[in-house]
Length: 114
Length: 112
Image 1: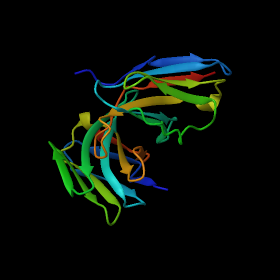
Image 2: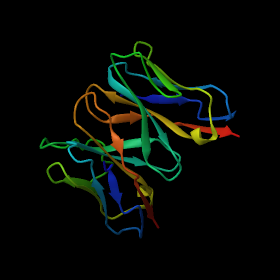
Image 3: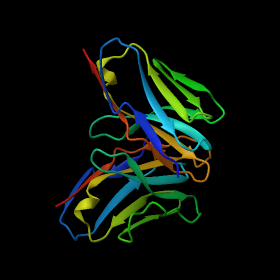
C-alpha cells in the first residue's frame, strides 16, 4: 500500500517568508509525527498528533512553528517568518498509535531559506 | 532526558566483511528501539524494531540486540555488500512519550 507522502520535496524560500509543508500519513494510522534534520545532525522531534488528543508540541523550537492535523488525515507544518537556521529536511512519520508500534517515515521536504 | 549515542560515527569496510554498529542510551526505561537506514536525499527506512521485552530481532543479514539494563543495542550486518552503504540510525521510544529520540547515526561505506 501507499506509504507516507510529503510535499513539496524541495522548497526554497526567502528569509522572512512563510512556508507550509504537507504530510499524508498511511491510511489508518492515528499517530503522526514531525521531525527536523539539520545538515550533519540527528533528527529532532517537533510535534506529535494522536487521534483527537491535544498534540504534544514540546519539540517546536519557537512560536514561529505551528502544525495542524484534521482528524486522522493530512497534517501541515507552518513556519512563519522563516530564518536561515530553519533550513533543514523536515520529516513526517506515522504509526498505528500503539505504545509498541513502528514509525514509518516519508521522504522528507528539504527546506532552504536564502 | 534521554540521550542516544552511536559509535562509530563513520565506518568503511571491504565487501564481505561482518560488522557491528553500536548504540547506547542513557535512560533504560524505553518502550522499544528501532534501527533505520537513511540513504542520501531520502527518508528513513525501518530495518528492525525491538520491543523492550525482547533481546534480539533478525531480518535477513541483519541482527539487532538489546540490553536494556546496560542501555545498549548493537546492529550486526553479515557479509556486507556495497548496497548496504548508507547512514544507520538508532532511535528509542521513551516511556513518558511517544516520540523517538535519535542518535546521530553511523555512516557506513562498503567498498567493492
